[in-house]
Length: 220
Image (cartoon, rainbow, N blue to C red; front, side, top):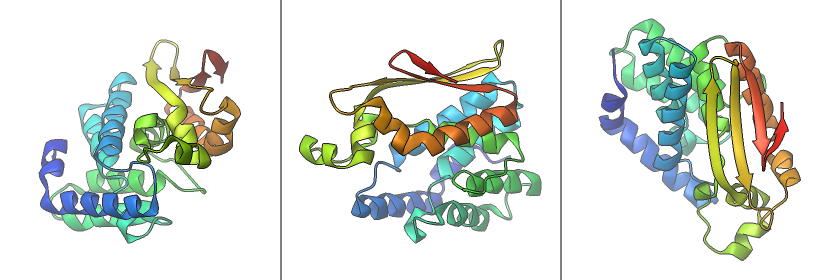
């Protein structure tokens, strides 16, 4: 079975990710590079571990998390499809068909409006990806310009982000601390409500409840 370490060392995968970083930087997007993909990979694996999935599923979740955004350089709108197809081109002869299709399906489904979750790896990836909001994702350094863009402003306002899984309580909790001098919590919901609904859908698929806590205010 292919490992995350082998995927990270693959020359083609490295170049896809490099080109995506360049492309999204040029568009002025928040970080989708090494910082983001490593966080998502690590979170997806930890979610899989904490809910009791197999080692195989932990590994596939980590790989899907690492590669889920690498197709952005071919176009932002359908990047989830490009990412899955690029992954298949690299590994179609090197990974068992079931593993390959589950990774591809997770990557292709992580950013779809008509989302239909059909495996646990997809659910782990969605929660890991959509929960990554933090000021370190903001590339802009000028605080005035940050405040002018609501996406940058909301990300920059999040000074602490903690995702936990309670197998006992069947609960996945995202706890955020927001600097209200930068933005108000309502701005967060304006931008990220759809993402939080996807997290809830993914948690439901896993048999868990998704809980969001912002500045100690609980929403579930």
